Image (cartoon, rainbow, N blue to C red; front, side):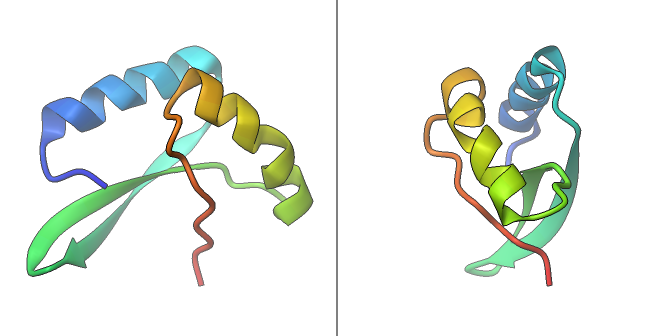
Length: 69
């Protein structure tokens, strides 16, 4: 999650360079407005699991699954 735009911008460049689609998702954490960078969408969880290792290798090693409800 990002409160600072410059950190988010550098990750967006990596995401685009790797060919992933993404969207930002506004959220609030401990009273602060933040943004999540979501890669996807994927048709189902197995499809997302198939790509998570590539995301961790090319974009962010601490990437994790987050499903919008």
